[in-house]
Every structure is written in structure tokens, then in C-alpha cells.
Length: 443
Image (tube, rainbow, N blue to C red; front, side, top):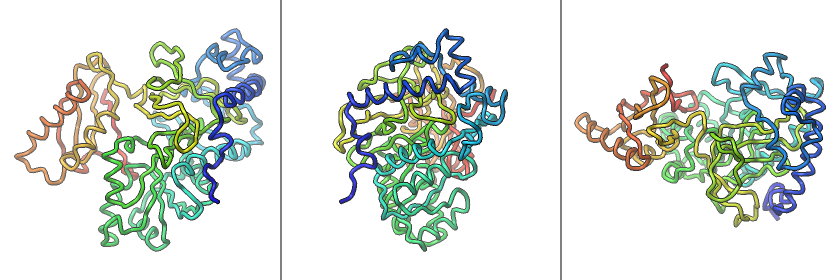
């Protein structure tokens, strides 16, 4: 009989047992961090605390937050792993590196025990999304030191599925491999299938739905929370499109996925992470209750190499449900609203690029769905300048009307003013994974 969940004792744990488990693990993790992490020992001292002062989950709020800036500064002080390393360098089994969007990378070290826990949690997510041992899955994320490449690969393998490590680039070869090898699942960003559509038609002379993919496991960027975009992928490709790979790469690679019964992200890192919410402005703790929105703060519960306590992720999420799901999993469900560092204030309105993305996806094929918010000066803003790609079939005489429709949709739905500039399809620069940068700062 096929297992219902990858790790049912933890995925279906009761709230009472989960609270006890978190308290027990925290009583081990905090003293370990205090004893072995130079950076945290200094942070504890500055807060007037010792490792023994944190005895309950509620005590964590006495600790200062950890930020990515601190991690970068730590690794500059003590390269390559920083003075927040809590394990012997000789015990490290694998090293990854963040994407370095600001030009400063962070090295992420994992011991063999850390790797096993990462794989277990990642397998929970991919299994919840529908991956099974009978699948042949091609993994199309960057393998070049980024956590989402090799570590997601090993998470996929842990489920028993057959994994093809293709990586990024050479899309024409990719579609041939999918056809020749009978691959029936793909792991990638949600924007990649849209880019691959024409490649399939050009290279193989067939429609994407005839290629044989039946399951898509997507992550790394927003998009699939919009049912219009998701339905488009499923209609064009004939596959089930699952939002099955949400994580914070320098904390835990993948710890949330939708299930096959409920298209909401399930928190699946019980026993590995303690997730808290804070108000991103006041920094006060918020309850994990349905309807609450806040910035996600993460603490490791059983990490050896580089454990974090009260790490600010900048991801803003909304709690969608806290009771057991129909699938039997008891982790709360949530959706990502955006990032606090991408949040823009327009005449008192909080604006996230994800909101603009959903409006434009609902207007395809009048537009391609690609856009950039162009900022020429720091906040505050009275309006936003947004560059939007129009669709292939839009005629010159239709441009003014389309521009007004886009501006009206944004004003009516998001209640702020936008000045839209229409540009031809493919004008906005993409990465080789088909992803465009949503906020372009020109100051």
C-alpha cells in the first residue's frame, strides 16, 4: 500500500505534541548555539542573556533578530563560513552559496546530519505535491552552488523518483531528452514552462501537451498562486502544476508544498524549524491564526553547522488555515504575499509586485504577463511607473486602449495609480530560466 505521507508522525502531529517537541528541541538547540557559535554568543551577551535563559518558545522574543546582513558581515570577518559556524569545519559535508543578488554571497554549510534532515523535509514537500517512485523527473534549476540545484535534486531522489539532473540552459536539448527518455515530471520555476512552449514547437513540431509531462513541481518564484496562470500551464502542457517547492535557501531548502487535496502551501518542517510571525514595522510577535499577515521569522530546532535563531526572512505571508487539512496533514496553510524589501509604499498603500503580476496574468494574451516596476527615486511614491509587455496580436491602433485598461485594472484592484509603458514581447530581459527582475531601481 502506498504511503499517504512521507513522514506521517511529523506531518500529522497534533498541536499539543508539536508544542512539546518544539520545546524539547529548543532546550537542546539554544545551549548548543550559545556554546559553539561565536556570533550568537556575542549577540546573547549584548542582550544580557545566556544560553540557559531561553527555556520556552515564548522566550525567543527576548533574543535580537538575525539578518542576512549580519551573515555577510560574519563571513567577511571569518571566511568562508563566518563566526556563526557552530560545528567543526572538518564535519561539513556540503557547501552551497546564495544567489548574491546584492553582489555579496553567503556560504551555507551542511553536516551529514543537516543534509539528512534537509532531504527528509524536502521529500515531505515533494511527496505532498504528488511525486512518487514511478515518476521520471527532470530537474531544471541551477546546479552551480545554489541550494536549489543539487539539494533539491537530492530531495527529489529521496522520494524514490528517478531524477534527470539537467540544470539550466540548452532548452532545445532538454525537450528532446524529455521525449526520448519518457520523462513524465519536471522540477523548475513556474515561469520556465511558458518559455519552453515555443521550444517544443520549434524543436519537435508538436504541442507541449504531447510531450508527455504529467506533473510539474514548481518553486523559486511566485506565479502559481494565481489560478489563471496555473490553469494556463495545465491546459497547455496537460500536466498537474503543483506549487511544491517553497523554502528559504540559507535556512532550509524546501519546507512547504500544496497537497493534492488543497491548493494552499502546507508548513511541513515540524521538528526542523520553528516559524514565527512579526509585524515587519513594529517587529512585535503575531499569532499564527487564520487571516494574520506578517513577516516570517525562522529558528532552527535541530541544526549543526550554521543554526539560526530568530532569522528575519523578509517574506510576508498570510495564514490561510490552522486546522487539519483534508489530506491529514496538520501544519498550518499559508500563502506568500511578497517580500518586505520589495514592498513599496504608494500614497499610504502597501504594494507588492506579486499583486501586479496577478492582474497582468489575468489579462493574457492582451499582455505577455511580464513587467518591471521602474523606480527612479527612493520612496515615497505618488504613483508607480510600470513597463508592461503587450501581446503578440496587439495592433498599433490598440495600444492606447490597452494601456488605459491595464492602468484601470491596477487602480481598481490595488487602489494605487500606475503609469504604464507598453513594450513589445520579449523586450524585458529574462534570465536563462525565463525569469524577469520585477523591480528595477535606477537610482
